Length: 161
Image 1 (tube, rainbow, N blue to C red):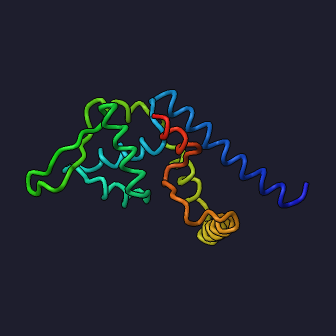
Image 2: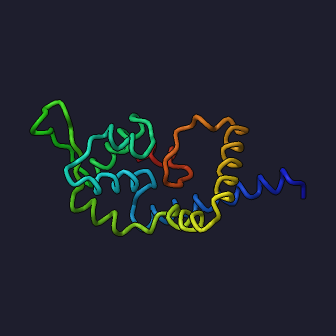
Image 3: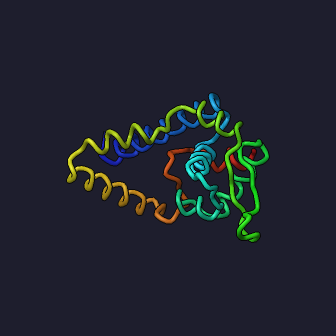
């Protein structure tokens, strides 16, 4: 097998692992990875959080976050409230059902990855990062909207919610 074939095979394995995780997450908790990521952000904000702050924190576009928030609100997992200090601001809050759903979800795939990655030497972390950034550039993917949570097919899944 040539090196480019081995690399493409490794990429397909990564995609397959994230796809399997996404299916497990949906089966066990009825959530997509971006939905879980947003629920976690809202839960972490003790005084509520705006949609724009969520988008900034998880590095997704405000439009994507807004669409996912709409779905989460429809499922009654979060609620929107006007701020009492500034009526122009809308703050997001986790509902009891949202907390239950979030806690029922499996551990995010990236947490295991982060633990293993942090166990590597600094030079090896830098080498992997540079290689993946180069691959993203070679695939014209460096400007694509991407969340910190690994998820394959979330665009299709969130479009059909």
